[in-house]
Length: 367
Image 1 (cartoon, one colour):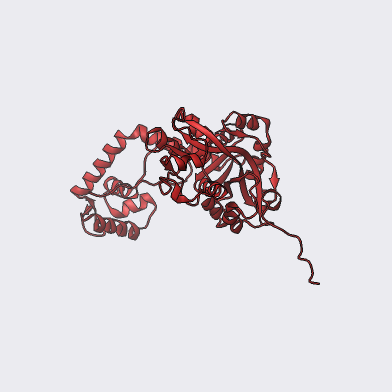
Image 2 (tube, helix red, strand yellow):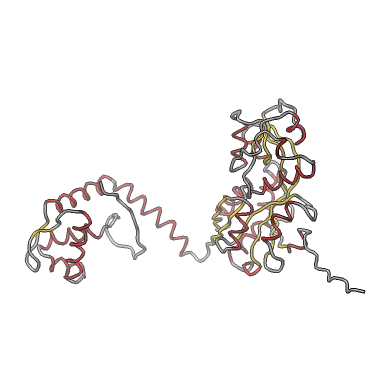
């Protein structure tokens, strides 16, 4: 059984029905219609040598003869060649509606690429419900497509630094102090003068618990004391950084948590683990908890940041995003999401102003 691979080409529109074109089938059809390889080559606009070589290459690949007749003389399709054309016609006829729909979808998608007023912004970001809302809002109102790939905060900034995206989304504890885990995690990845931060949202993180909070969990110390089953987030995610930072503040160790090594890839997955009874608690955002019908115990306020290179600020896609974030419509929408509020949305800020981890005061001269 041979594998079928589909491909497409960008070309001027042709008349007639949309088909999935295949070069071998076009060769076989031309040989059948014109009765010789040389006539088929002229009809297709190829040299005789090219057509003959392609037929032989396909015969070797498929393990069957495609044409009969000697080189330079009249030719006809072999029985196998006839069956290939028959099978292709049958498939095209049966799949014609789906093929035409696929053509239409591809043409609509690529039409945006040729639209000078449409912008696409590639964004790697820590998972966030407000970003999903922003993506839909941008597509509906601003002719801006956000190409978002959700990943851990550390991976998102690394992707930005490696040129794999234009913008990265990450979050930190509000007013994270000097010496914090957030500083140790993010400071090596961000460079003042090279990166800029764009304000996005203030959000609340806390314990996602079962509906009604049957274990009466009010803090991380309660989770540890009750030996409640905890579900964590993976290393490299911003929520894992936040959790470990909160543990340091409370003087708690990983060993105090039953399930510290168990992790889920997103806030929604943490909520699902708790809703299904696999865990009792996990750190996450309020919207994920309420969306799953669960309880929520607020623990910390965060700032969600959008980072980009300073040199990219003038790109049309980023300018379109800034205008969107500063608009009253978006700021109202953000306020409707549980646990979120507008704080500096769309404001471009320096690292040293927003994250108090750099000290540019010159050292005092020795006495």
